Length: 159
Image 1 (cartoon, rainbow, N blue to C red):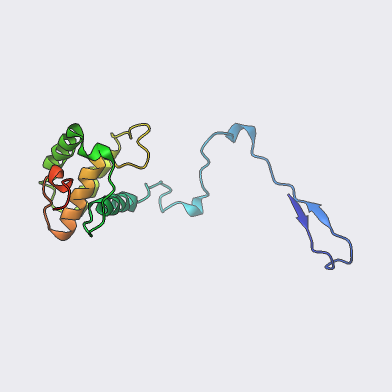
Image 2 (image 1 turned 135 degrees about the vertical axis):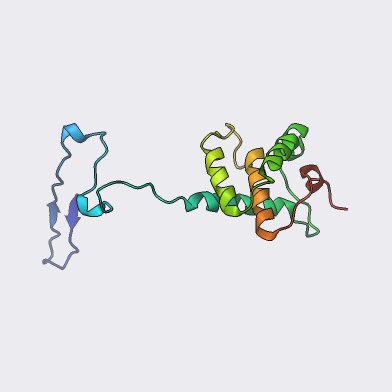
């Protein structure tokens, strides 16, 4: 990598130097490198990183769900698939399975198990899928203690 000094620092000439970086041995290419011993936890064993990301994903999905559900006098923009009868039945099926979940911590654990088996639908884009919507709705319910009505009632136009 060239290092260039500013003109005037060493006279009127710019100085360029090349820094040699040691190459990795061919035997380690593509292999997982073990960090030095002082970076490992005591005992030298690796521990999995904590997963607050799952709770954050559920919270973000809940926020994304709230926007189209919000009633503030303005028309609500929602994906057309959200009113499809098959989609509605999928959401209600998952919501029924989630009713016994006592708190957000248990919901997050359940989502972790669900997410590892769930693959997103190709081409779904930014649209939330039925399982994610059901979990997001449950996240909201566990947070404020308000049980939401059935999905088709939530999708009904405001009166």
